[in-house]
Image 1 (cartoon, rainbow, N blue to C red):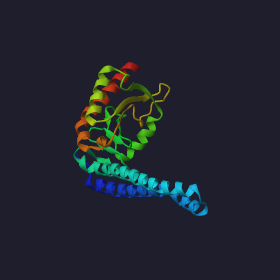
Image 2: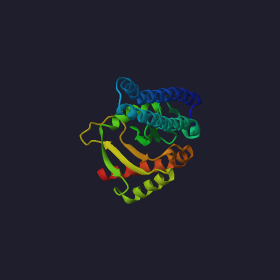
Image 3: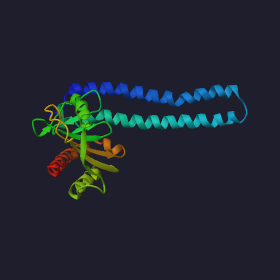
Length: 233
């Protein structure tokens, strides 16, 4: 299975507009105080004017640095679906930065890697449009297994740490969500959700690193779900 070129093209067009709007809003928002200070510069005199002449260049440079950093990061996000197309599900790309792989692994904003259980059993491979609804359902679940650097079963921690290093991330965590014991059975809701988070720099946006780890990460999340369900039983 490969991702649809039409949906990738649509994502790139939509995300380009969002990048332009975000950067424009960032620049306008950052420079707005300069306009206020310019008025005060004209209205007052003395030491305030000297302070203003220092503030404006600093604010201008800071705005350019922030806009450039966000611009580079967002452009890398825009390029991800085309670079990872060979492993994306046919309906795995939507208008927002949510990508679904052919093994059921989902990447959402903030680089949350998630898997959802299917009500029919096994792992669900949702469309990108279905992910937001599945995430809302996750909010009604309870985290029953938490794995961090020094917390959780060692066998899973070692595997999570290995993937963290392969992605060149600084921190990682893994959570497994199951329905609350008091919840009524719902055939339309995912019976489990597993989520892994990674934080770091631009290396998290490297499509080659991501593709090399999606199968290992999917296997880790499934094993974590199995352990969590066994512990609850």
